[in-house]
Length: 365
Image (cartoon, rainbow, N blue to C red; front, top):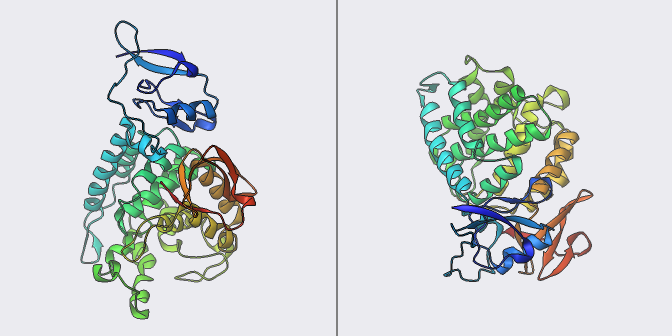
């Protein structure tokens, strides 16, 4: 199929986008192979996209799917799920998850085989190559947020977000690889916890919680003799430590906690909050960010929390959200002074949540 560039003013519903259309800062506005609707054409105009590529037939006429129905309900997530990139991301994500389970199998409290660092990184790269940047990774993870378990998938999500965080921090490629593996292996100690406790659908007893709290030390013991960067092992041991001394297992404070362990901790908390669990629904990302905004600066190095919140909030620009009054809109802009209260376009009007008391984002749709 050929393609040609047209002006946005020439676009009509039913045309097929030939290439991904981006706005400022690489935000994906409309993915390739999307069938245009009045809704998506309005999106292009709103973001001041003046021209883009569409698919055309051999005679140069636009390829139009005449059976196209008007889709005013299309959300950003629905657009994303239609992209070839997401389908490849989903496939490689699920394959990695299965392979990861085999690579970290435990027999008699010990790893069955040594950790193959190179193999894990190669497999991780097969997932990341289907994403252009950290923003795109987060959008695709959001589309898969119902595919979660308490150890394997959670750890993979933490690893992917640690990879993005490393880029936000402008770390070297080598350090980003280490941080990614730290995120992937941080919860390996949970494999030693009885599944009846890990999967319990009700509140843990004090005794059961004490067993859970042993997983950082158990994880460290599993990795202690592995040929891995020391920061990976420390992240496993210290990812529940807090700079105010309220964490475990050692109650460490401030600089006694490794920086990579702090980064993994922030990501671990965020991913856990936005993922569904047997005993609760998934929290809205903005609800999770609000918790980190209120409490994170007391328990982690402020510079890490600030960089995480600013970049994370910006990944949700263009996403469709539902407010607590049931209105649906699109996030337009993030206010760096009030990260969890963005500007939202609702029914043709702009709503500044920072000025609307009692109004907030209830969920992403």
